[in-house]
Amino acid sequence: MVSKKILVLGGAGYIGSHVVCELLDKGYEVLVYDNMSTGQSENLFEKAGFIKADILDVDSLQKAMQGVDAVIFFAGKKAVGESMINPEMYAQNNLIGAVNVLNAMCANGVKNIIFSSSAAVYGIPQYVPLDENHPLNPINFYGFTKWEMERLLAWYDQLKGIKYAALRYFNAAGYDVQGRVRGREQNPQNLLPIIAEVADGKRKCLQIFGSDYDTPDGTCLRDYIHVNDLASAHVLALEALFAGRDSMTLNLGTGKGVSVKEIVASAEKFLGRKLPVEYAQRRPGDPAVLYAKADKAKELLGWEPKFVSVDEIVSSFLKKH
Ligand code: UD1
Image 1 (tube, protein in one colour):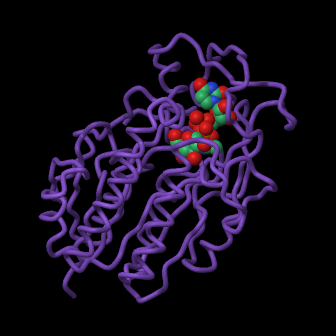
Image 2: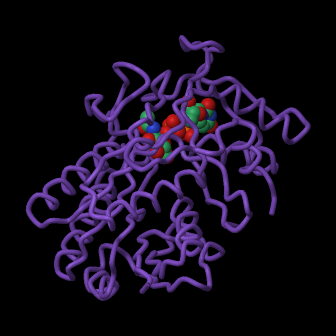
């Protein structure tokens, strides 16, 4: 069987590099395309090809598309706070970038795309667990760009026959359990990488944003999904599209809400010491509770997360390889 060629846009980033490992394991030919603005050179693997370029560079994108069977699209800006301060950058990178990608696919006859969407498309939950039919009402510009990108995909499916899987991640967490991914995000904004920096003494203290939420321990609940589980879902979605399945929009989560305090306690257990923590004001725009109903991914892809214990997720993040 001739191996299929997958173009991974943003393949040197956090989730992208884990998916590249999974694709290589499964025998796919992989071409990573990354502008290295946040991607890490340690995340480039010898067995995969690499092009250093931006998705705003239409000529490079056109060239990279040649002979490709499917695109996996991670090359997006993803910091919620930054998107509210600099929406121009998010519109440019995420929206114009998405149009460039889809147009380059059309020009080269590439018919399949796996797209990184986000739970941020839902906004403040009207109910939990959030299923895929929950109304979409993003409350930050980042979430808005993801929603618009989903709508672009739906139109390009209808008008140009491009089949897609839009995967709405909940809180991506953990690192490759086999230790293959070495690069660590710089200037992280999310809970677990911040904890890792506090553990390493790079930050003085972890601030817990809000301890008076209407939740069992007063801190926010999130659905932390292990990045290796996200990676396996991408490959299953890709195989489903190659098998001729219709486009799909799926939540990827564990279905379980875990509190900030539980994450901190698990980190302290792994490290064998207390972390410096202080309680701070609620962070604007943080819903108290957010977790997925992820049954559709199980039904359509047979996907189920394997690394569901908080300790497994947290320790895979903090372990030094
Ligand atoms: C957000 C987005 C999510 C996106 C992700 C990527 C929403 C609702 N969610 O997740 O879609 O994929 O960012 O960046 O927009 N916390 C602290 N102290 C810290 C940092 C975080 O207490 O220093 C708490 C937060 O209040 C939150 C939890 O930890 O309750 C997780 O926060 P974070 O890792 O930033 O992710 P989300 O905001 O949930």
